[in-house]
Image (tube, rainbow, N blue to C red; front, top):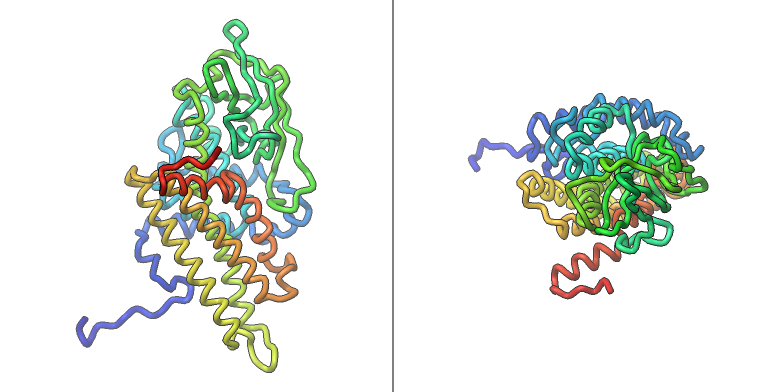
Length: 396
C-alpha cells in the first residue's frame, strides 16, 4: 500500500465490508425490498402481531408479486429468475421487518412454487406459476402432520387410486398461508411411495381452519389442512418425483432462505440495541459507554456479520450449483441459533423496554422460537451434520 493510499472509513452498519461482495443489481434489489418493508410492514406490524392477524395478506402478496419477490429465484412462468444471493438478500430484508412476512414469501416461492416448478408437468406450471408469481394466487405446502413432523416418512395422509382419479384423506398441521391459499401442494402416501398433489383450495372435502392462540409468528396465517375424500383428477399428481426426495428438496430450498432471514431479525434487534445504548442514560451517561454494554454489542456484531458472511457463501455455492443439503443444515443451525442469542442479548440492553412492542426485539425473539424448529429442528440439523461428519446414521 502506498503512503498516499487511504483505507475506507469503518462502517458500523457493515463492519466487514460485506457490501463490497455485492454488485449494483444485488444492492438495488436489497434496497428495493428494504424500502418496501419500511413503507408497507414496519408501521403496522406491531399492531398485526398484537392482534394475531395479518388482515392485508392478499394485498401484500400482490405487492410482493409486483416486486418480483415470489418464486424469485425460479425462471420462466412470470418468475424473476434472480440469483440465490439476491433471493437471500430479499429474505434478510423481509425478516428484518417480521418473520411472518418472510414466511409468506418463503412458503409461496421456495415450497409451493418450487415444488410445481421442479416436479410439475408443463400444464401444471402454466396453470399455477404465473398467478402465484404475481401474488394473485397464494400457495401453501402440506407436509407436517399432527403426529409426524421430523419424521415425514411416517405421514398418514393417503392417496388411493379410484379409476383414473385420486382420493386423498388426511390432516396436515402448522401450514403457513393455509386458510388463504388458492392452491395447496400436499404430500401423501400412495401404493407407489410418497407423491405430491396439486390441490385447488375449492376442492370438495378440502378445508383449512386457521390455528389461533399462537404466541409466535402472530403476523402470519397458520392453518390445519383437512382432506376428507378429496377427489382429484389423474393430472393433479406431480409427475416428476416419487418418495421423500421431493418434499425434502423443497425444504432444503426454503431452509436456505431462513439462513439469510434469521440474520434480518438479528440485525433489527442489534441495530435497536445500538441506538438504545447510545441514547439511554444511567449513572449520568449513555449506557453504551459502559464496558459491559459495549462487550454485548461487540459480541452481537461479530455473530451477526459472521452469519451474513456464511449466508453469502452458501448463496454463491447455490448459484454455482454446488450447495449441498448438509451445508444448508450448517447454515440454518448456526444462523437461527445465533439470531436468537442476539435477540435475547438485545433484550437485556433494552431492559424493561425490551419486552414492549414499541420496540421490535421481543417480537423477533418470539418469532425466532418458531423459526428455530420449523423446517428442521435443531436436533435434526445436528444429526444431519453428525452423519455427514462421521458417516454414521444416528436418526434411529
